[in-house]
Structure formats: C-alpha cells, structure tokens
Length: 367
Image (tube, rainbow, N blue to C red; front, side, top):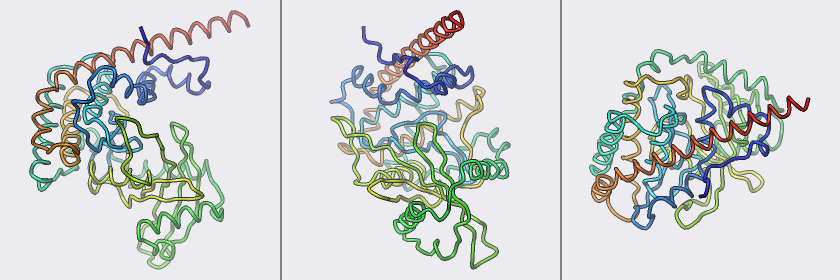
C-alpha cells in the first residue's frame, strides 16, 4: 500500500527535523509541507471529473488565518489557482483535525463550517452585493491581543537582523517595478528609502523589506513594503494558473478572498523573476495560539463564509446556485476524504518521528 505522506528524516536538514519534533507546532508544520502530496492523494480519493472548478485559495489552514485592523481573513495566496473547489474544503478541514490531533471533528465544528460555507455561497448568489465585513471575523481573544507596537518591533527586528544595502541596484529596481505595477510612482518621490532587508521565509522563499520615510509631509507615517519571491508551480490536468504573472495571480486572489484586507497589494518583476508585494499593516498577526472550542467554532464559520463566497464568485463551469446544490449533496464525501488524509498525515508524522528518535539513539550509542 502506497504511503502518500512518507518522509525520510535523513534527507531533511537539521533545522527542519528540529521543527518537526516541536511538540506544539511540529505536526501542523508537517501538514503544511504536504500540500503537493495532498493534491495527489486528493485526486486518488475523489473523482475530479465531477468537481466544479473555481479560483481556489490553494492552501487554506488555520495558520494562514491572519488579523489586522481591517479584520480577520484567510490569506497567503501563494498556491491560489484554478482547481477543484473541494480541495480547499478538504485541505481546511484536515488542517483543523491536525490542529486538534484528532482525525475527526465535533459535530458543532462541522456544522459551523458547513453553514458558514453555505452563507458564503448565498452572498455569491446575490452577486457579492452583501459583502463580508472582515472585522466581524475577528476572534475576541485576538481582538484583546492586537498589539501594533509588538508587530512594529517584530518587523524592526527583521530589518536589523537581515539588513542589506539600500543602494543595491536589484532592490531599487524591484521597488520601482512594484510601484509601476501599482501605478504609484509617487511612492519613489514622496518617500525616501531608508532601510532594506532580505528575510528568509518559512519555505525558502525570500522577503525583501523596504522601509520608506516620508519626505514631503512630516505628518505621514513611515511605511514598510514587503516584496516576496513567488511559487511557480507547473500546470497539470486539474490545476492551472490563469495569469501570466504569479504576483498578479496572488493579488487578484487576495481581492477575491479578502477584499480590502491587504494594503497596497501588487506585483513586481526583476531579471526574469516574479514577485508579489504589499504594505505591511500595523498589528498584523497570524493565528498561532491554540483555540478553545468556541473560538474554533467561530473560526470554522467565518473561514467557511470566506471560502464559500469566493468559490461562488469564481466558479468556472456552473453558477453559484448550482455550486450550492453540489456542495450540499457532496459535503459528507468531502468530510470523509478529509478524515482519511488527516489520519494518514498523522500516521506518517508519527512514523517520521519514530525514525528520527531511532536515528538519534543510534548516533548517541555510536558516540
């Protein structure tokens, strides 16, 4: 029997092995690393010929749920593309199972997501006229912990730790391209480039930070622009990129799933490479703390709401009304597939850690 999520610890760098062994976040990180393999397993478990195609998020999970003063939203659209809409549903539900370390969900959590998704589809049926107020999606515990100064300190620390030369021609060209694609050339005259940094991302992609200081109006606040390298996954039978530029793909996905949430979304190009950019919002934070059950219920509803609306507005081969019926008829099957993949992921994670523990034992014995 094929082990879809098998991973050899001997082939991983030490930093990755250490991260996977972390008691709090190791399992979910393991899950996050399995997106491509999950798509393959998903195709093995469900007939894709019956699945409507939408502009999917591509990687919805609880640690991609983020907050700013504009509200809370499922963000990070690196994997967004045309694909079977049910993949978003199964990926998210599996995320919640992995988060709870149980290959199942309580009826309350399932019902919350289910009804949230249907309410999102209803908004799409209304042609998006009844929009989502993302401020209503903020969990109360988050609202209490929103700390803009802490966020500023975090980004200031990254600027200090990964500082680069602001006069680097590559960085200046990258910022100019971003401003051009946003039709905001005045950013280059109204602000002075003060500091830059090149920050490594979680999965190897780099973030280029640009700290801009106002030059004309002293009452304006400095701003921080983040321009990051993008993923360029090849198209296949079920998943395809509808845009020539991956940064544009991500910006359009952001407006579909979280309209108005991101500040100054845009894209850039340099030397044949593609990038996505945005202004860092004060107080931005991702969901890291474990949620109590009422908070999980609210999160499942609001994330379902956002996914349902976006799928309904972007479905390619039928209308939102038909998608509404398709979802109701097939949701139990999607939930079953989510449970299968969550269980297989957790089994593979345990096998990975057993191999790693055995390896450490053998090394210590040999030493």
